Image (cartoon, rainbow, N blue to C red; front, side):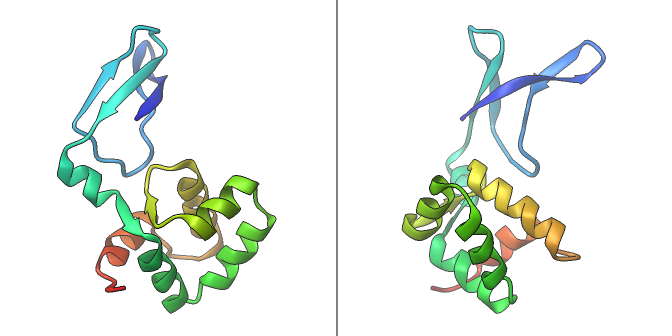
Length: 123
C-alpha cells in the first residue's frame, strides 16, 4: 500500500496512515513523497471482512438503509464496490469515506469497533 508523506509536526515527516491502520513497516520511496507500507499476514487478514459480514452487521444495527442511500448518491466506484465486492478492505478509500459518514451520522458509531464486530458475524 502506498501512502503520502506528510508533516507530522514541525520538520518531522512520516507516512499519512489512515486512522486505526496497523502495519508492519513503512519505507520511504525513491520519489521522496510517498511511503510503501507492508503488512504481516495477520494484519492483512484483520483488515478485511466479507461484504456479507459488513452488510449483515449494518442491517442488525439499523444502518443499512442509510448506507444504501449514501451509496445511491455516490460515485460509480462506490456503487460498484458496494454491489460487487466479495470483501471489504478497511484501508480502501470507499470504506474509509463510508466509515467517516457513519461516524458523523450515528452518535457512538466507532469504525474500528464495527470492523472487530463484523469479523465475528457468521455469514
